Amino acid sequence: MNEDVLEMLKSGRIPYRFTYDTASALYFGLTVLVLVFLYAAAQAVARRFIG
Image (tube, rainbow, N blue to C red):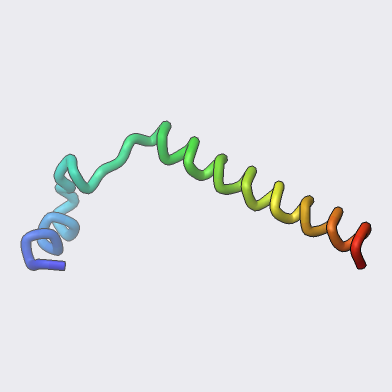
């Protein structure tokens, strides 16, 4: 990171390109959680029927 960004972070002024939309971040987190849950469920089903 360059000095300008570090200074902005220290002073609390963060430019718009370093901020993100809260709703999209929330949906992204939920999507990741759902994918992890589906993966774990698929692993459990595969272990039950194959193993």
